[in-house]
Length: 186
Length: 136
Image (tube, rainbow over all chains, first blue to last red; front, side, top):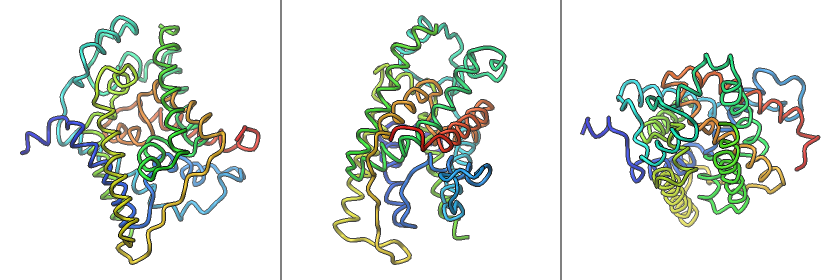
């Protein structure tokens, strides 16, 4: 049992458990699953700067910040305490393509160090992957009114066509980056 | 104490994200390259279970543990949904993370997650400041 918990979990275990988070949050407190809102609440709490969109009672959304704190705690427990493999077991085809197209050689860890090491901030790669990438995530999710949790999981679970539009947008952007912009960058 | 339940649910959510490796950049690349079913299985089965749960809640008019009727607000359409969605998609493929995984990565001890979260906060702040000038 312990060994099973330590290994990476298959999709048919993790997916349904993620899905159950939606009714769990509704049942315990009438809350809709959505994580990108926490970024807005943090901005409203720390640097509202008189911006109307950041001037609201963010304290009423404290639950969302606590939930996100839990996610970080879960990351610590799941990765550090429960153990993890050195290499994420992605498909051989992906390894081959990433080696050939993006010149990656180090496949250990959750993220490729060659792109995400903090030392990379000294060159363009770090700025594109760490700074621009993060910026686009924060800008885009708020502009769209939700991210993978709020639109894809929560929204589609509630049969919202608006969320389907958002998810098509997510994939259009992701596919363009992977198939068109990455080959131009490397 | 009233927030303890959210801390517990968030922690479980973070453990699931971490153990299923959806917080890995490599997994997201594998997804966008259509080279594994893993991510599609996770997201698809999560939606399916969420959908069945919400139907059960609605049909049985279930209430919260505090006895309130459960209300789920409808998502409102504006053009930001697809424009912003597209912009987020570009960032998702670059960082290999959506906001949830960023916090799980931070907890797992990855230093770059701190930079990514700060950059994401800057992005959210910039959107908030420019909101009235952007097409919606």
